[in-house]
Length: 207
Image (tube, rainbow, N blue to C red; front, side, top):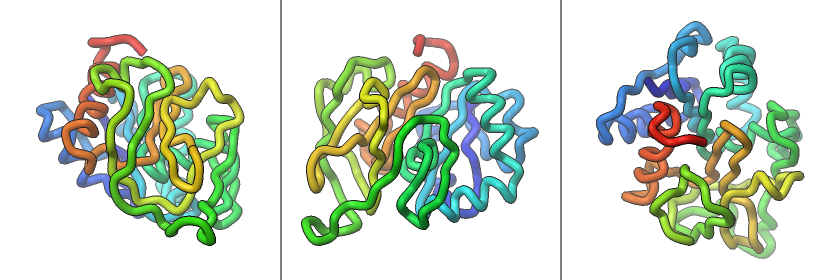
Protein backbone atom coordinates (compact mmCIF):
# COMPACT_ATOMS: atom_id res chain seq x y z
CA UNK A 1 0.00 0.00 0.00
CA UNK A 2 1.31 3.43 -1.02
CA UNK A 3 0.40 6.35 1.22
CA UNK A 4 0.07 9.80 -0.39
CA UNK A 5 0.29 12.60 2.18
CA UNK A 6 -2.83 14.76 1.84
CA UNK A 7 -2.13 18.23 3.20
CA UNK A 8 -3.43 21.71 2.48
CA UNK A 9 -0.52 22.86 0.33
CA UNK A 10 -0.28 19.67 -1.69
CA UNK A 11 -1.62 18.32 -4.97
CA UNK A 12 -2.32 14.89 -3.53
CA UNK A 13 -5.36 14.04 -5.71
CA UNK A 14 -3.43 14.13 -9.00
CA UNK A 15 -0.64 11.99 -7.54
CA UNK A 16 -3.18 9.59 -6.02
CA UNK A 17 -4.88 9.28 -9.42
CA UNK A 18 -1.58 8.41 -11.12
CA UNK A 19 -0.99 5.47 -8.77
CA UNK A 20 -4.61 4.38 -9.11
CA UNK A 21 -4.42 4.58 -12.91
CA UNK A 22 -1.51 2.14 -12.81
CA UNK A 23 -3.60 -0.25 -10.72
CA UNK A 24 -1.72 0.06 -7.44
CA UNK A 25 -3.11 0.03 -3.92
CA UNK A 26 -2.94 3.63 -2.72
CA UNK A 27 -4.62 5.75 -0.10
CA UNK A 28 -4.65 9.33 1.12
CA UNK A 29 -2.87 9.79 4.44
CA UNK A 30 -4.19 12.57 6.68
CA UNK A 31 -2.76 11.57 10.07
CA UNK A 32 0.48 10.07 11.38
CA UNK A 33 -1.43 6.99 12.56
CA UNK A 34 -2.24 6.16 8.93
CA UNK A 35 1.47 5.82 8.14
CA UNK A 36 1.79 2.67 10.21
CA UNK A 37 1.05 0.02 7.59
CA UNK A 38 2.06 1.66 4.31
CA UNK A 39 4.97 0.22 2.34
CA UNK A 40 5.91 3.51 0.67
CA UNK A 41 5.21 7.21 1.23
CA UNK A 42 4.75 9.99 -1.33
CA UNK A 43 4.90 13.66 -0.40
CA UNK A 44 3.63 15.77 -3.32
CA UNK A 45 3.61 19.52 -3.28
CA UNK A 46 2.77 22.84 -4.87
CA UNK A 47 3.18 26.31 -3.41
CA UNK A 48 5.81 27.35 -0.88
CA UNK A 49 8.15 25.51 1.45
CA UNK A 50 6.89 27.55 4.39
CA UNK A 51 3.24 26.69 3.74
CA UNK A 52 4.07 23.01 3.27
CA UNK A 53 6.02 22.78 6.51
CA UNK A 54 3.29 24.67 8.39
CA UNK A 55 0.64 22.30 7.10
CA UNK A 56 2.66 19.18 7.98
CA UNK A 57 3.30 20.52 11.47
CA UNK A 58 -0.39 21.33 11.98
CA UNK A 59 -1.14 17.71 11.08
CA UNK A 60 1.53 16.48 13.55
CA UNK A 61 2.94 14.60 10.58
CA UNK A 62 6.66 15.37 10.78
CA UNK A 63 7.57 13.02 13.63
CA UNK A 64 5.58 10.20 12.03
CA UNK A 65 7.30 10.73 8.69
CA UNK A 66 10.72 10.76 10.31
CA UNK A 67 10.00 7.56 12.19
CA UNK A 68 8.81 5.66 9.12
CA UNK A 69 11.38 7.05 6.67
CA UNK A 70 14.51 7.63 8.74
CA UNK A 71 14.12 4.79 11.25
CA UNK A 72 11.99 2.14 9.54
CA UNK A 73 13.62 2.97 6.20
CA UNK A 74 10.55 2.53 4.05
CA UNK A 75 10.81 4.06 0.55
CA UNK A 76 9.87 7.73 0.31
CA UNK A 77 9.22 9.84 -2.80
CA UNK A 78 9.09 13.64 -2.64
CA UNK A 79 7.67 15.61 -5.58
CA UNK A 80 8.35 19.32 -6.27
CA UNK A 81 8.04 21.08 -2.88
CA UNK A 82 8.11 17.57 -1.42
CA UNK A 83 11.70 17.44 -2.66
CA UNK A 84 12.78 20.91 -1.55
CA UNK A 85 11.74 20.59 2.09
CA UNK A 86 13.97 17.53 2.51
CA UNK A 87 16.99 19.83 2.66
CA UNK A 88 18.27 22.03 5.47
CA UNK A 89 17.20 25.52 4.42
CA UNK A 90 15.13 27.23 1.72
CA UNK A 91 15.56 30.76 0.41
CA UNK A 92 11.82 30.72 -0.21
CA UNK A 93 10.69 32.50 2.94
CA UNK A 94 14.15 31.92 4.50
CA UNK A 95 12.89 28.90 6.41
CA UNK A 96 14.67 25.92 7.95
CA UNK A 97 13.41 22.68 6.43
CA UNK A 98 13.40 19.02 7.48
CA UNK A 99 17.15 18.56 7.08
CA UNK A 100 16.96 14.92 6.01
CA UNK A 101 19.51 15.72 3.31
CA UNK A 102 22.44 18.13 3.43
CA UNK A 103 22.05 21.21 1.24
CA UNK A 104 19.99 24.30 0.47
CA UNK A 105 17.20 25.49 -1.81
CA UNK A 106 17.97 28.49 -4.04
CA UNK A 107 15.90 30.71 -6.33
CA UNK A 108 16.56 30.92 -10.05
CA UNK A 109 18.06 34.23 -11.20
CA UNK A 110 15.11 36.06 -12.78
CA UNK A 111 17.49 38.47 -14.50
CA UNK A 112 18.64 35.55 -16.66
CA UNK A 113 15.61 33.25 -17.05
CA UNK A 114 11.85 33.38 -16.68
CA UNK A 115 10.79 32.57 -13.13
CA UNK A 116 9.02 30.29 -12.53
CA UNK A 117 10.21 27.69 -14.98
CA UNK A 118 7.02 26.31 -16.49
CA UNK A 119 6.76 23.51 -19.01
CA UNK A 120 8.77 20.58 -20.30
CA UNK A 121 12.53 20.31 -19.90
CA UNK A 122 15.11 17.59 -20.44
CA UNK A 123 16.23 15.47 -17.50
CA UNK A 124 19.63 13.80 -17.74
CA UNK A 125 20.18 10.82 -15.47
CA UNK A 126 23.58 10.88 -13.77
CA UNK A 127 23.63 7.36 -12.39
CA UNK A 128 21.84 4.07 -12.81
CA UNK A 129 19.16 3.30 -10.29
CA UNK A 130 16.06 1.12 -10.19
CA UNK A 131 13.90 4.24 -9.81
CA UNK A 132 14.82 5.33 -13.35
CA UNK A 133 15.13 1.86 -14.84
CA UNK A 134 14.13 1.57 -18.52
CA UNK A 135 14.15 5.37 -18.99
CA UNK A 136 17.40 5.52 -20.95
CA UNK A 137 19.90 8.30 -20.34
CA UNK A 138 17.48 11.23 -20.56
CA UNK A 139 13.87 12.28 -21.11
CA UNK A 140 11.53 15.26 -20.92
CA UNK A 141 9.44 15.97 -17.81
CA UNK A 142 7.05 18.71 -16.70
CA UNK A 143 8.15 21.50 -14.34
CA UNK A 144 6.63 24.38 -12.42
CA UNK A 145 9.36 25.76 -10.13
CA UNK A 146 11.00 28.99 -9.06
CA UNK A 147 13.52 27.31 -6.74
CA UNK A 148 15.90 24.37 -7.01
CA UNK A 149 17.94 22.28 -4.61
CA UNK A 150 21.71 22.45 -4.19
CA UNK A 151 22.77 19.21 -2.47
CA UNK A 152 25.93 19.28 -0.40
CA UNK A 153 26.69 15.67 -1.28
CA UNK A 154 27.08 15.15 -5.03
CA UNK A 155 26.48 11.41 -4.54
CA UNK A 156 22.85 12.23 -3.71
CA UNK A 157 22.27 13.65 -7.22
CA UNK A 158 20.33 11.23 -9.43
CA UNK A 159 19.53 13.57 -12.34
CA UNK A 160 20.05 17.13 -13.56
CA UNK A 161 18.29 19.67 -15.78
CA UNK A 162 19.58 22.82 -17.50
CA UNK A 163 17.78 26.07 -16.60
CA UNK A 164 19.91 29.08 -15.64
CA UNK A 165 22.70 26.49 -15.70
CA UNK A 166 22.66 22.87 -14.60
CA UNK A 167 20.71 22.09 -11.45
CA UNK A 168 19.82 18.96 -9.52
CA UNK A 169 16.31 17.75 -10.36
CA UNK A 170 16.34 14.29 -8.76
CA UNK A 171 17.96 12.92 -5.63
CA UNK A 172 18.43 9.49 -4.13
CA UNK A 173 19.86 8.77 -0.69
CA UNK A 174 19.33 5.27 0.65
CA UNK A 175 15.50 4.89 0.77
CA UNK A 176 14.82 8.58 0.05
CA UNK A 177 13.93 9.58 -3.51
CA UNK A 178 12.71 12.91 -4.84
CA UNK A 179 12.06 14.78 -8.08
CA UNK A 180 11.66 18.49 -8.75
CA UNK A 181 9.45 17.86 -11.78
CA UNK A 182 5.88 16.58 -11.56
CA UNK A 183 6.11 12.89 -12.42
CA UNK A 184 2.32 12.61 -12.27
CA UNK A 185 2.01 15.18 -15.08
CA UNK A 186 4.90 13.94 -17.22
CA UNK A 187 3.21 11.37 -19.41
CA UNK A 188 4.52 7.81 -19.85
CA UNK A 189 8.00 8.60 -18.53
CA UNK A 190 6.62 10.11 -15.34
CA UNK A 191 4.30 7.16 -14.86
CA UNK A 192 7.27 4.83 -15.30
CA UNK A 193 9.01 6.51 -12.35
CA UNK A 194 5.84 6.07 -10.29
CA UNK A 195 5.67 2.43 -11.37
CA UNK A 196 9.31 1.84 -10.45
CA UNK A 197 8.86 3.51 -7.07
CA UNK A 198 5.89 1.25 -6.34
CA UNK A 199 7.93 -1.83 -7.23
CA UNK A 200 10.66 -0.68 -4.82
CA UNK A 201 8.12 -0.01 -2.08
CA UNK A 202 6.46 -3.40 -2.55
CA UNK A 203 9.79 -5.23 -2.54
CA UNK A 204 9.60 -6.37 -6.17
CA UNK A 205 12.91 -4.67 -6.90
CA UNK A 206 15.58 -3.48 -4.44
CA UNK A 207 16.65 0.07 -3.61
